[in-house]
Amino acid sequence: MLRSAVRGGIASALTRTCAKEERAGCGIWNPAVNALFARFASKKQGGSSSNGRDSNPKFLGLKKGNGEVVRPGHIIARQRGTKWHPGVNCGIGKDHTIFALVQGKVCFSTDKLKGRKIVHVAPLNKEHPKYIEGIP
Image (cartoon, rainbow, N blue to C red; front, side, top):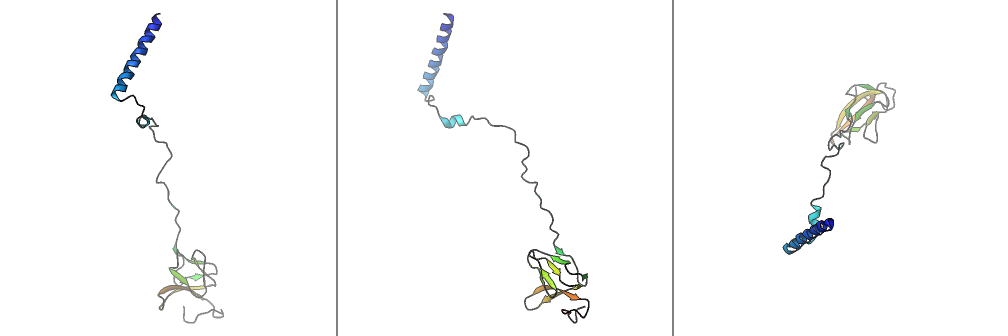
């Protein structure tokens, strides 16, 4: 008997508070209001670095200077684009690397018509078919 009286009192109290809320306009369930009280993790997860990336050096530039002796296949210059253009006895790779085709001395010159810097390799012996007279 006592239990039913207590239960009846709690039930009546709940109905009284719900009736007050309905009169005040608060009895309607609003999903947007309930979404504001959603709880999420309060600590940031580890291992997310926004910086921390660095590329390896590409080692571009001239590898042989003016007057240096090179052998076939030696790299004279590594570049992005054609800062230096290949001349006589020089080849160019698909990444614009300039390399020697014969044994000789490296010579730099400028094309006066187009204003380009040109790299030549002058063969050491005069019997070479591509020997250039006047280039040291």
